[in-house]
Structure formats: C-alpha cells, structure tokens
Image 1: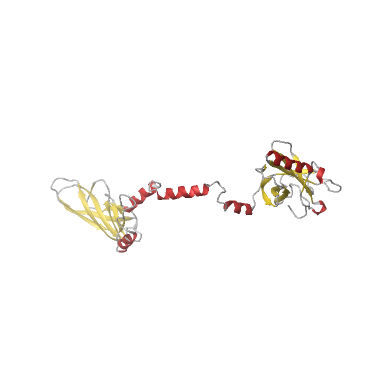
Image 2: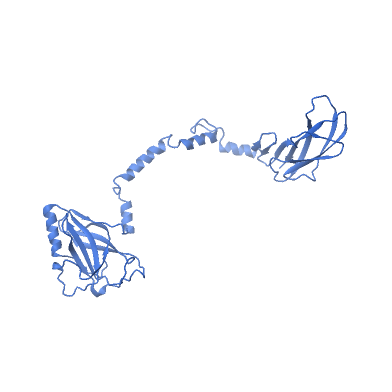
Length: 330
C-alpha cells in the first residue's frame, strides 16, 4: 500500500477468524478489498464490521506469505469504471473461514494524506495495493482472485524464472523437443525435399554436387536454364544463349517474290542477336528440286524476334516449305 496509509490493523472479528482457522484447520480465504472515503476520527477499529463509507471493490490479483507472521494481498485500484471521484482514505480487507461468514478482517485509513481518485472521464494508470496483514500461526491461507487484475513486471519475472511455475511443464517441453529434433521422421516433408534438391536417395547421403562444385561449374559457363523443345533454348552462366525453332508450323507456298518470316524467340535476348541462320523444311516426299534463298534481316530483328527473307531462284516443281531457324545472342 502507499505510505500514506497507517499500518493495517486486524479487527476483533479478524482475530476470531484466525483462531477458528487454527482450531479447525479450515482455510482462511481473503475474499475482497474495499476502499472508501470515510474518516477515522473516533473509530474503534477493533469492533468495526465494515467501512465507514465504501465506494468501490478492488479485484485481488495475488497473495503470498510475507514473513514475521504476515500475509501480503495484492489488489488493483483503477478508475476505468468509477462514476464519481472520491478520496480513497480507508482500505478494508475481507475474509472468511471455510464456508463461513465473510467479515472485515483488517482495516487501514490514510486520512487527509490521500490524493483524489478522479472518475473514469480522467483515466489514470492502475495502482497496485500491497496490503500486509497479520495471520499469526495460521498456515492454510487462500484468496479469491479476479480476472480483472494485473501482474507486475517483478511478479512476471519471478514466475518465468521459477522452474516449478508450470508443474514441470518447461522440462517436459525441453525433453520432448530434444526427442523430436533427433527423430528423422519428425520432418519427413523437409528431408524428402532436401533429398530431391541434392539429387540423392535420402537427405543423409552426400549430394551429387556441392554448392562449391556448382559455383565452379557456373564460373566455367555451365548451363543455367534450358527448354529442350521444338522451339527452345539453352542459356549459359556467362549469358550466352542459343535459341531455335520453326518460323511457322504450317508449310507455305514460296514464290519468286520475297517472303518475310518473323520468328518469335522462346525467351528474349537480354542484349541483342549476334547471329541467326535459317533452313527450309518441306513435306514433299518426291524427288523435287527447288533452290530457296534465305537471309537474316538484322535491321528488323529485335531482342524478342528474328526476321528472315526467303525467295526462290528456280525450281523444277512447286512445293510447300517452312523455315527452321537458329539464333545466337547474349
């Protein structure tokens, strides 16, 4: 409790409760803390059964033995639901023995030294009240906690460093985690994927190639990407790329006049086409002769396509052709 309060004093009913608990072995249960704005002038605390002017009930958050026959009850004073401001002069601690009657166990009053507690329209930080009260030789002490309470930083630290805080749960988790981490079946999806990446039958085998091997291979210009299809490419680590394909899938008639083939590349060259070459293909199965001129048109080619011109010089038969091409770039 703040220093402005007088030492908490046990009432006559409080002492009777202590005696009953010791005699019957029934527990003393601290049930609530009540604050009010009553004066202590002329009060006989020994015979008090309640506060002079109670204003609000405080939730109990914790309780523990404090030594020298004392017990410490922690309560939280907050104004978040307080309708009317008041001076919290008096503090009363209530308790019961077993299932018996609830009584005013102890009382304290801060008099005019206590500051004003504003109503909820002026929010303030909650204040922790540590109420120290006498319990003598009583050992069976409990308290009624409330969900509407707080934990201090010190209490949280104490709890987190207590090995028995969760009934051995921490050690159980450590043991199960150690067992889990040494079980090769615990992460089967991951180990299977590792094996696939390594090119091995299982993740514990030596990889087909180490990262150092791969780096060395790439440094020598190894293949880093490819598409081995009718229209495909092979790309090397130094950027050099070979691409190939068919100008059009359909066989077309060629005449003596110039015809243009615009061939879309499977992937764009990052810089430009260095060289391109084409060759005609025919579906004619008879022995015919046709001479076809094919020329790359670099002025029309781009990073996305290569362009060829074709025309016929002479032929002995009129057949259909299509263009097969290859391009080099980087």
